[in-house]
Image (cartoon, rainbow, N blue to C red; front, top):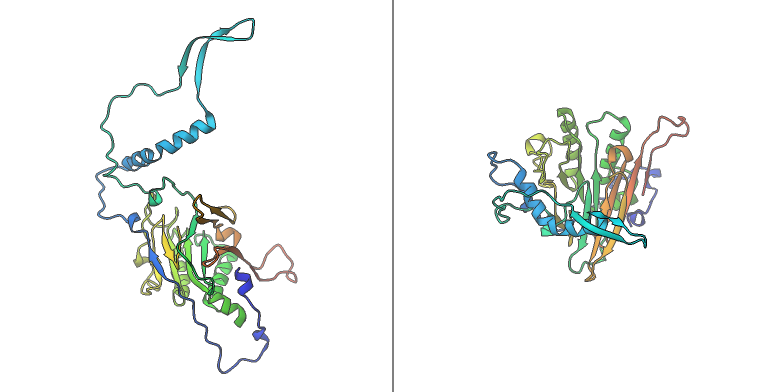
Length: 332
C-alpha cells in the first residue's frame, strides 16, 4: 500500500541543508491502446442512429438472455377456473411488437462498435478496469494516481485548496523527505471529468496541469461537462486550450473511453470502491470507482505491482469547526 511506503523522517524540524536530497521520479512503460476510439475524417451527412443500431445488434443476445432471467415471459391468457382449482385456457397472447415492414439490415462491418475490445460491455460513469498482463516484478513499487470530477467550474475555496494540495503532493512539494520519496513512486496521473466548461475554468486547469507535467506523466480524459463532443467516444480536448502545458511531452490528451498499458497493467461515482475479480482462467481484474474530487477531496492510488488500491483524502480547513480545532490533513 502507498501508506506503507511513506516513512516520516522529520526533516522539517531540522535546519535547512546546503545540499538537499535529489529524488528521481519512477518511470513506467506506457503504450496507448485507444486508437480505435479516435475518429478519422468526420462526416455530418448522417445522424447518430447507426451508432445505436450497431450497439443494439452487438448486445441483443446478451440483453435478451438477461431480460428473460429477470422478468421471465409475459403472457396474457383467456379462460375460466374450474371447481377443482384448475384453469382452462381458451386463448393466449404473447407480448410482442406489432408487425413491422421489412427494412434493409444494418451492415455491422461498415459501422464500428465502440464497446471495449469487442466485449459487449459499455461503461457508464468513471469505472477503471485494470488487469495484470504477463509476469510483473514485485521488487519496485510504482503507482498510478486516479482522480475524477475536479470541479473547476465551481468557486468553492475548499475544492481549490484540495486541488493545490493534490498537486503539491504529486509534484513533491508537500511533507518531509520521507513523504516526498513516496510521492516519487507515483509514475502516472490520470484525471477525468475536469468539469472545465468555461474559459476561466480552462485557464485554471492549464495552470494546475503545468505544475504536474513538469515532473510526472499526466493523462487527461474529457467528461460530460468538458468542451468536446457529447456522444461516445469523446475525442481528446484540443491542445490549443492549454498554452502553458501543451508543449510538454508528458501531457497526454486522450479519448473517453480510454485504454492504455502502464508497466504491464492495462486499464481503461458517488464514493470510492475497489474490487478484485478472478476470471475462469485465473486472470485477475481490478475494478475501481473514483469519486468526485470536488465534493469528496479523494483520489485513488493503484499499485502497479500488486493491484492494491488505496484512497487518499485531502481535508482542508472547515468553516463549521472552530478556529482552534480546524486543521489541514492528508490521510492515506
